[in-house]
Image (cartoon, rainbow, N blue to C red; front, side):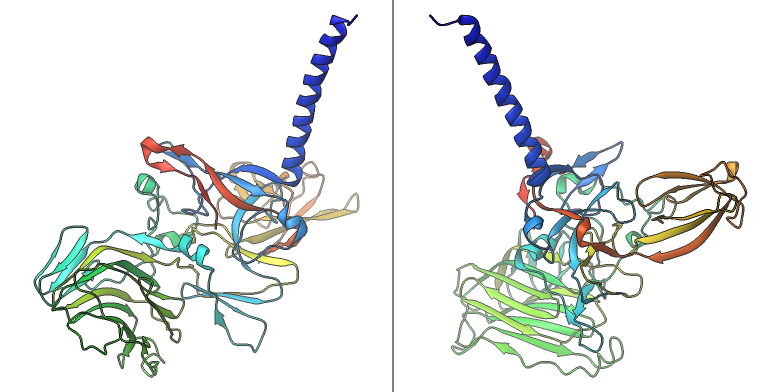
Length: 485
């Protein structure tokens, strides 16, 4: 005869074992495979959102893959989670841009790499999925410059030959802070201009020459040509698309024009590359929308027409990034749903250049105008000496203006957080040399100065950010559910 009490004990035991197994599995997944993180700051905006103000709050939750980096090394342009070398109690999330044993440069808004001294610098181009993340949409208006033109907000219409210009007349396109943000949060993100941001790059606007224009071209029977023009410093890039009225042997093309005496030294002597033309004759079909895209990106020009054509033309680098966009109609035509994007402009105080050691990486935030990353990380050091006990040591930690260290003038003390996240209160005078054996048990505190600390070692990198899964607020126009590229 079965024992009901024994059966009951077995039932409870089975449940407890299942719960225990689930907890162990969850802990193993967290330790070795997957973990969820909350984005607390805006250094990766708008790729990853982290904003908390009295007026508005949005913080992405992301899934981090901790297994991949256990079996292989990190790769360039991956979004990585790592322990901050100058305060290891904190986890940071940035994009990997500099790899071990190479030289990296930030100049004129672009990234440049070379193997070592004496090798030529080459512009660092991003993979397609990363570049799509970095294109930032612009919402300036299209303005009629010449000809019988109308713009209903979604379509540029030319009843005959004419020219549209994007944006304000005679002003270059710049890296405005809100470009690329979700419309639902764009106007709620404070620029902190009034209070003075930590990173003064936020106040500046840099002229941006890397641009993309896309939409649908619609020609009429008597359209000779539709041309998209991108301006960059002393150059004009013309993306020419023949219409039905063009000669039967007409071909789409990319052409470069230069102007003497404009731009920085060297630009005026630039020899324009030969035009790039389609191999076969091709013209727009009257009344049929043709999807197009033109771009100037990292010294490469590109013209795409539907599935029929993809032309590229490499051009030399140019220092001046003064830019403009125009669309020229030779005859009637339309441009439906035209959109414009600019590339990320990597801000720099002058030129940043690093020689990256073995097993080390350079990290940058996608929010380049307001990101604490390899460009500004600075190591602060203090020597501590106890002449009585014969002890000495060095405190190392992150130097950040207004945050660490903090001088407490009313108490004649210095507050400092070291590289392990430990807090210290150091008695000091003007020369940062004090005689107070109570504080830290040392007699003398001497500042050793500061030095750049841009690198993250391989052992500090703990995971790869792979997806955003929260927040989801459809009524507020915020749905953060996407893969991270």
